[in-house]
Amino acid sequence: MAPEFLEIVPAKKVATEQKHNLAEAERIRRMVALHGSPLLILDCDAVRRQYRALQRALPGVDLHYAIKPLPNAAVVATLREEGAFFDLATNGEVDLVSEAGIEPSRTIHTHPIKRDSDIRYAMEYGCNTFVLDNPDELKKFIPYARKAKLLLRLSFRSPDAKVDLSKKFGCSQEAALPLLKQAAEYGIRVVGLSFHVGSQALDPAKHVEAITACATIVQQAREQGLPKLEIVDIGGGFPVDYVDDVQPINTFCAPIRAALATLPAGTRLIAEPGRFIAAPAMTAVATVMGKSMRDGRWWYYMDDGVYGSYSGRIFDHAQYPIDSLDFFGERSPSVLAGPTCDSIDVIEDNIMLPELECGALIVGRMMGAYTSATATEFNFFKKADIVVINERVGEDCDVLPLMA
Image (cartoon, helix red, strand yellow):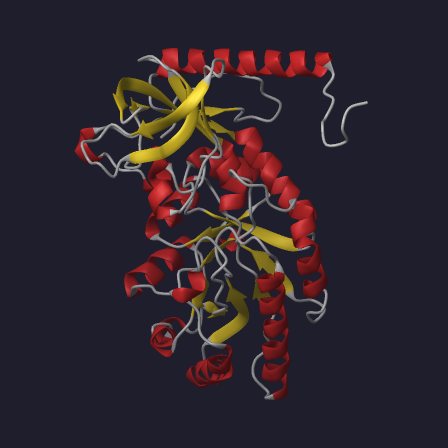
């Protein structure tokens, strides 16, 4: 009898998985043959799956896709058809949703710090809901008091998150009521509260803490006769699997759902998912340009690196599931380096790979968030092209025309 910790995998299942892997490898090779390398494959079906999963996990919450991690027209169009809302932060993002025909009423502008020209640009499009977190920002809305609606952003420090966004933005809980009073004196409408506990949060406890604090401030504002706070925006931070597994999204959101139920009846609930929707939607493919044996390990130099699609290794502190498309053969510790002449351009310095030849393909998974969005063309190595697949529901297409 086999030990309990060993999984007995039926031979039929193994054969099916190998067949699937070989079929996927062939599809990727065909795409590279047609479009070249480096390449990013954007799967709109993955966008749909992620959006629907979060929608099920947070019923009654209006999901505003945060465009920043993957500002792509195909993603916006896919989510438009899903009935999504959108979270904007810059004039370029305003342009993206405007060109996609998104109704301005389905957008909010969440950058806490804005130039007057940014406010006017968004309002000319029709987006009238903004975020602020300090008295100086509040004063910028005096000329727009008749049209603008504001959300006051609170800070909840979250050092366990990959990116602690409350380090840079958000006011303290103690500063909230004085700011609400100041807004009332100016005749500016603050209609709700917002927060963002940080990107890739691994524990929902910080969301729960923030929602509880918002409930307290809503009650205190009502007791002091301040205008009613009708909206609570719980931000993003919903985690996805990279190298390490995270909680399933329904499990992660269970305590959040319970906390949201304590808010006053009729409160409009908003979330700002970005990474959760974008990360699983893209696969990166790069080609080995050259190889060198250095200090007993093979170094493989690819045509994409940390200045390109793997920029998230630096900017986003992300580790991606990476492997060779040729996954057979004995593996040994290896190094994956990018194409530039900079020594910092190393993607993985201890990855187990079979011995590869020039022309071999390297595949990175979960490459949708903060990759192409932060890529550069440093050293004149061009950024990866993006190929969109499954742009239409029910489509089973290997390759569609290139989309930037």
